[in-house]
Image 1 (cartoon, rainbow, N blue to C red):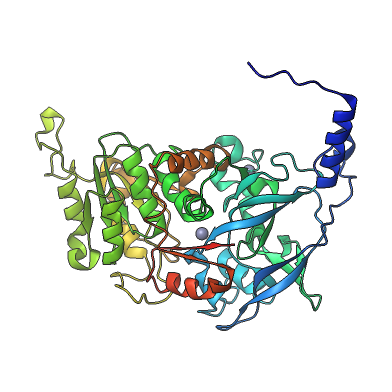
Image 2 (image 1 turned 90 degrees about the horizontal axis):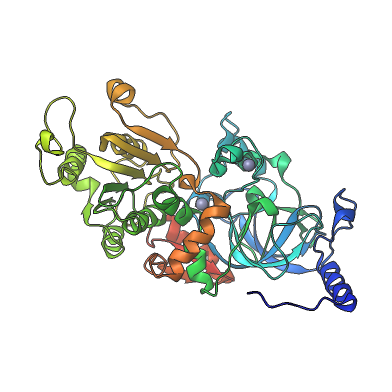
Length: 458
Ligand SMILES: [Zn+2]
Ligand SMILES: [Zn+2]
């Protein structure tokens, strides 16, 4: 039974006063957005990217702007250095000209904006706008790479992973959150940022978490990549890993290695991890892979290799077995998670057979069982080609989505519990932890793939 607390008028006034000081929502009077902005007059350090070339990202001291509406200020504890952001942080390639595709237009449009890169992390809420309800000052939170408004067309259909706010990150959508010393306004990548002492976001991107775990461990399990890997295997949104089933993971970066862990957690009996980098295959075995394959060694036979490994104890079709002959083979993985993606720069460790990521994506489809599921997560540009017969009536279910289908408010707290229970091994994946000052050097390691992943702890 809950302890009964005495409510006094003085106590209520005290609570209201401290809530007002913290900028928390105070009730109906602020529902019309009339409440004043929260001014913290705070300065903070941030890695700001602007222009082109290798030195486009520099450490700056910024002054935070007043916080309004549904904005949330989070003091960063940890953020993962996501491979997908490496090009823009390090200036490895000039932002592509606006080519009509969203990503190209986005990068070109933001090239001359002062922008804090990164997309999420974990931290503690330092201030909230007057309309914020989801979190309070002092809460430990995950700033999710994927927002969840809970009210849009997709959120209402159980697909929070493709919440429509996700696409509201064009240059014209961004709002300045701070100013440089010379008065230049500074924006956050995708409304979140991460490579800074503060993340200024909106409440739709923030998920409260209750945890005493170390920042680097939480930053790992709740990074965009881990959420996607666990989302694909344990969230159950896109497909379900049945106990005793067979799973193939194509690509063993932090996303694929989190999917390996998710497949183990969900009870898969055969987990095949595929990656050209030996160090990553070694980690895959340590976190749950039962088999590893090197695509450089296997070549085009890799599909047959996966089929052979997932064949099951008998090929007698009448006995529930998998018949590997005929035009309708019974072999193939029950679930394939494609997590290879395209190479941004040539890795200093082993390179894969196809740096565009197209071939691994096609192979992922073809190594799936006729009654199985394929989840794609890799950032690949171009066009994939699949045998039309297989695609049309082959029986394979393909699922594309953001974050492996993870539903942030539902799944992120579950992933924290997997960390607490020792079922998700964060430390095997965090092969580099750095402070704010050493971010660039660690990002080089991520870009050239000499580390599995890196976490910046602030
Ligand atoms: Zn990411
Ligand atoms: Zn939504």
